[in-house]
Image (cartoon, rainbow, N blue to C red; front, side, top):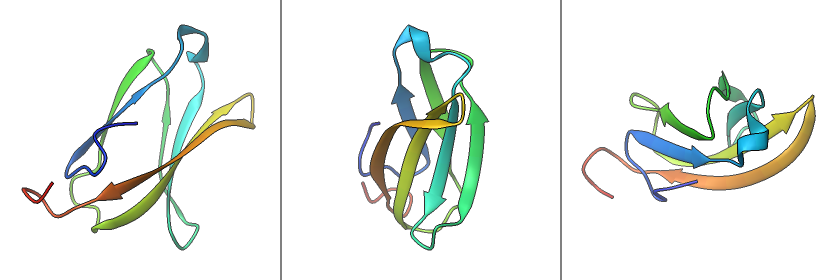
Length: 79
């Protein structure tokens, strides 16, 4: 997951075998704020308009958590 911190876009690189997995983004209150199916091994998530803060980025394969990372969103132009 990079860049970290990020302002509007976050890139998630996964192994080729992860195609079809689901990327879920949660805020620190535990609310899922985004869910996206992996169409390729290099995914870009657009998070403009989301408030600054810390987010959990989780990758699920067949409903099992296979990877988790933390990403920090800054205000646009501050990273």
